[in-house]
Length: 257
Ligand code: NAD
Image (spheres, rainbow, N blue to C red):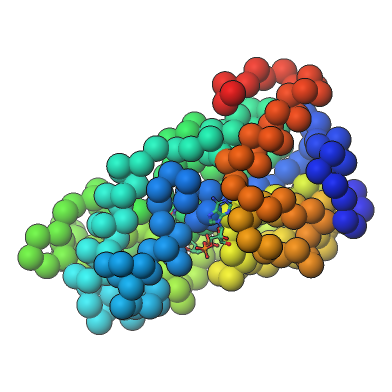
């Protein structure tokens, strides 16, 4: 498939049951479930802190309790929320498009809650803990006076997420690299394109000849993608799903309608 500006109708026409698609989601897809994006999470209670102070090994070393409490606050918000239409449609696409790879930068677990399987959580999950020293896994434990400690090595427990300055799992990156090299369509939804390596996926897919589409409230990546669909992720995904369904080429009946 050749890169170049296209319209929404032409994009829909390219999609069939055998299309190899990579979807990358960011905080924007969960915004409509009430989960703050990083920018929003800087409002109110946490506004005096920079993300690097709250989401980095240095930040945790300097003030483990502050960091743990911030994640506990975010996790509570997630537990109080539900997947939205956007998550549900992507779960349906996982069945409609057997060759779709869904990658999320989100740590909230809302894609799984909507029924997505084979999801790549490239930045980990807010629902799991690991210890700071040895990365021993632990179920979630609430903090009391300080930070909970690892049962095995007594090192402080932290969320099992990838922080600023940390490396991503090599096997996950290899898996993503193969999917990007092979895909025919790349779709980035609700991501600012500021956090690497995810920010480079669009260019990688494009270099492999994929059609690149961005869904965002803002005019993000307009000069780099073939199609920018500006607006709410769930509204646009619903519109795309309606058009896909109108073509009657898929066997799976929609439960997202
Ligand atoms: P980001 O906060 O940098 O950007 C969010 C993007 O979503 C923005 O471009 C914004 O314009 C767009 N957006 C907001 N609401 C939208 C909507 N309703 N529809 C469509 N687009 C919308 O988020 P990012 O790019 O994912 O990167 C930030 C990092 O923060 C990631 O690494 C991620 O792990 C982490 N994070 C995760 C969560 C979560 O798990 N829900 C929340 C905040 C931050």
